[in-house]
Image (cartoon, rainbow, N blue to C red; front, side, top):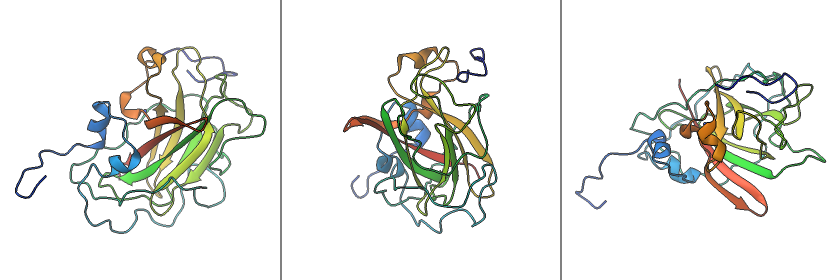
Length: 241
């Protein structure tokens, strides 16, 4: 792991009768280097009864803020399947030194006069059997386009909650590079009354990925593309129960 930077700077993811063959888990798809759109990732499992959305009504406890749902939708989701391949939870990674609790509840981190290229990331929060997690907490923070974190306030920091389908959507800017790290987003994800997943999300095709000691291909954003001057991507979080 690279040395931690100074505190004022940035911190240091067939036909009938034929055997269809083995199914691929979400993690295996990522290991094969496939950047699939979210609906295709969801349908990588066998379809089955969706059941009730996971999660009681009690809210998460790791971030303060009024209750609410994620602002905006993540687009049209394919019917949520029930996995039979024992899909693995999303890989956890270090928090780093610059997490700030009690971020404001908001799905857009954009502010007037903010530099950088617009980024929209959308996805879902699921259990290991592909059931949607309703009202999962997602708390995001990141560096700005120059590679600096706001450690005095809440610029480029905010939390939101997944909707009844487990969907979430984040509007922000592409984070900048800084010494020792590739581009990444920080996030904490927590189902109601569940354990906290702390991890990071990464961008495919970044030259610095190979030089970053924390980088993991399992945490790459999928379906990354440029649309109307903005960059878009997707990620599905899978939570352990």
